Length: 142
Image (tube, rainbow, N blue to C red; front, top):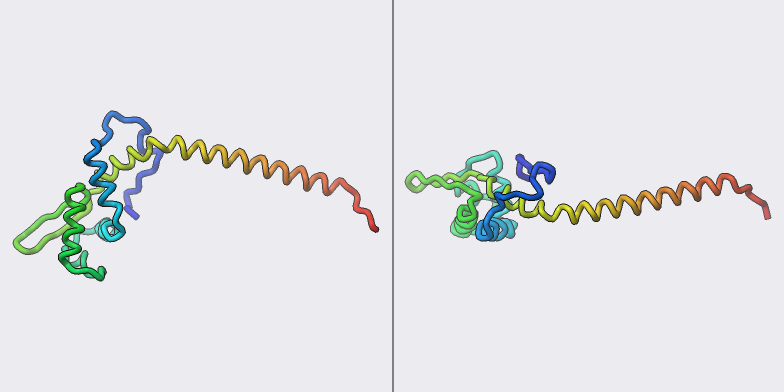
């Protein structure tokens, strides 16, 4: 999980600074792959060499490099090269744009939570009434 988590309350529901469609497409496409998400997780709070990023994966260094390039194009990873050495670090900025886009739909989630809370309240009230009625009713022996 990214350490600098974005709570829905911290993201404005409506904003003029909404990211453009192409940027969102790149970010969501990059996040769609579990190996790329794992690369981002490993870069959270660390700057790593490509070889260090590739170590835990059961794929080639070249395949990991291709995943990194997808993340670079999406703006999620910054890569610095010194000769043949390539260091990578996380840039979570574009994730904010995705969070803003997703947050626009939180009103639907909230509505569902409000409906669920109302149903749970009704069920709890009925249970309380049943318990109360059971205590008042004298037990008869057959």
